[in-house]
Image (cartoon, rainbow, N blue to C red; front, side, top):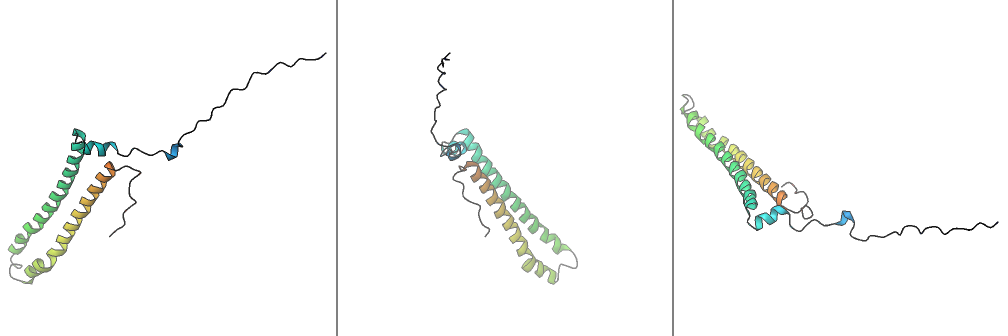
Length: 135
């Protein structure tokens, strides 16, 4: 007896999807923060105001440190033994300048950090420059 073979149902059709691989997709050219700033929206103004506020805070801190330094010098000169002596000249001619340099350096570092944080917020990650070297 011959067995009849019944036709098998066709296998499901496979479809090949072509497109850009997931890892190769580019981010949008402008991040939302950058477009908000360039379009001068309320949110963009808030971003810029936050940068200005952080820069103002850094400047006021440097100013307060400088005022404290300069404000305490007359009190130092009021001390009885210090009023007429080489310590006055030492304080005015030598000791003040390294402290001024440290205050200025701290301000510059803080201001650059504020700007780098802001730039990182508005820059497209695909466009981000590599880490900056130390000067």
